[in-house]
Amino acid sequence: MPVTNDLILRDECCIHYNIEVSFLDRLHEYGLIEMVSLEEKQFIHTGQLSELEKFIRLHRDLELNVEGIGVVSNLLDRMKRMQQEMAELRNRLYLYRDVDEL
Amino acid sequence: MEFIDYYKALGLEKSASQEDIKKAYRKLARQYHPDLNPNDKEAHQKFQRINEAHEVLSDPEKRKKYDQYGENWKHAEEFEKAQQSRQSRSAHSQGRSSYGEGFSSEDFSSGDFSDFFNSMFGGGGGFGESGGRSRQAKFRGQDYNAEMQLTLKEASVTHQRTFTINDKNVRITVPAGIADGQTIKLKGHGAPGVNGGPAGDLYITFHITEDPVFKRLGDDLYTTVELDLYTAVLGGEKVVDTFDGKVKLKVNAGTQNGAKTRLKGKGFPVYKKDGAAGDLIITWNVKLPVNLTEKQKELFKELAQLSN
Image (cartoon, each protein chain N blue to C red):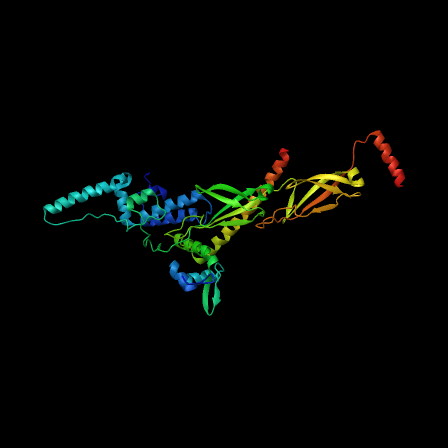
């Protein structure tokens, strides 16, 4: 895959993952994948590849369309934030439990 | 190796149609897909089982073999060999050669499938086109997220930790000065890649429990130290606990309640900067004497009169 400063050419990315260019464009339209325009060419940052791979898996394994992927992605982000908040609250609870035991 | 009931895995009867199989797979895949259940090992295993069941039952050839041998799959190869040998002998006697329909390992895929699947359908090959899905592309394994709790004291020293993630022991060095909520990445410690793709990464988020004595703000530490009235008024010395141990401090005469003293370099270690540390800020909490004796009360009265 041609890589320029951590950027991968959109078309090469599609060949590598065996996906339609339109699928990638729709992910971009929905704000799920960022693309960078350089000299009239579209590139994807390598930092986004793991997200892109997740979207491809959801598309292929669950036959989700881009709208569905967007909803799932949004809910997963919310779930992650809630889990982090829960861990923080659990930490605070431990602190009070220790105080009570003293 | 245990026999796997693929029909049961998809919640189907043996008479299930291709449409039933597809429907059951879609329903269960939506429920147990690893991307929808991050860090859930059980869901991951269930998805593998469902995927495997779908791979076999949605392919008429594979389903036929599975249905034919069922629980006796262990003897499938021997049975086929014996059958081929019989056919060969029979053909030879008729002056022509014949070959049985064997399954080649290249026909099917192994991927993350069970030993049962590999033993029955062969392993080692990549995924072929199946149900319109191409599995030829290499995929990076899924990233794992983990959380680790540290006390403030533990976070102040560089130390090693060993923990188990997906039955693998991982040993990491936790650098002194790590912050609450900070995440570090361990490259290649996530789920294995698919079709020879690289493994995912492991992200560890640290949660630092609050300390009853020291409060951390950035690299500075804050603590409150009690000071008796006489030392506060007359001045003197006070031994104070720091993260490095005890230090003896000079207390100025006339130290007010709530006054602060800054000890440079006695705070929290700076992350990845050897030898550097923030400051320790001490807030003096002047304690008034209680339960005074008659003599003490007299002296305080005398002092009050002198002050007036």
